[in-house]
Image (tube, rainbow, N blue to C red; front, side, top):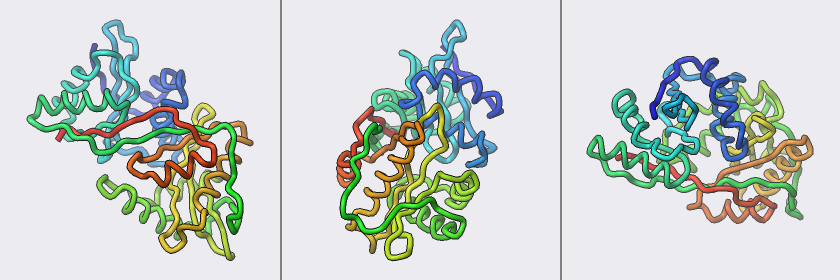
Length: 280
C-alpha cells in the first residue's frame, strides 16, 4: 500500500470522485468539498493537500483531503491504510495533525501520527450524519422561508462569522465572505426565515453532488432564539430539496442535544457517526 499526492484539482477530482460516488451520502463531505472548489463556490487553496491511498496493484483504497488550516477529511480507508498514511504525513505534511472520518479510523490515524512524533492523540469532537426522506414541518412558527437575495449579503456574512465563533470556537475559521458570495452567485443555496418583515434565521446548502446536498450554516441570532425559526427553516429547505429530486443530509455535533432533537423531530434519521481526532 502507498500514498500519492496530487497538486492539480482538475486531475485529482476526476480521479477520485467516481470512487467516492459509489456511496454518495456517506461520502458527501468529500464530494462537496471537491465539487464546491470545482464550481468556484470556494476558491481552491494553493496548498490544498490531496492524497490517494493505493493498494499494491494501484487500486484506490482511500481518499484524504486537507484544506489548510482545517482537519484532514478521510473517506473510509482500507484495512492497514492508517500506518502508511501516517508515514506520508509525517514525512511530507507534518503540519496536518487533525483528522475527521469514521471514529475508529480517525482515531487510529491520529494515534499513528502521534506515535511517530511524540504526541498524545485526543478526541476533539463527535458528529452524526443524518438524512431525510419525508419532512414533518413544525406548526405555529411565525414567518415564512425565502431564498436569500443579494440585499441580504452583509447580514449573512455577519451571521456566518457569528456561527463560526459560536459553533466552531475551538477550530480554525474561514473568511465567511467568500463562501457566502459564491453561494449567492450560484443561486438557491442560501435561505432565510423572515418574520416581522426581516430575516431572523439562516440556512445554507452545498451544491448538489451525485444528487445529494448537505445543509449547514444553520444560525439564529441569540435574541431571536426560542421561536422555532431554525427548525422551520431547515424543514422548509429540506422539503424544497426533496421536491427537486435531491437528497438532503446534515451533520450535528453530538455535544449539542438541542440541534440533534430539533432535526429528528422534523424527520431526519441517523446515517453514520464521524469524529475529529488530533495527534497532539
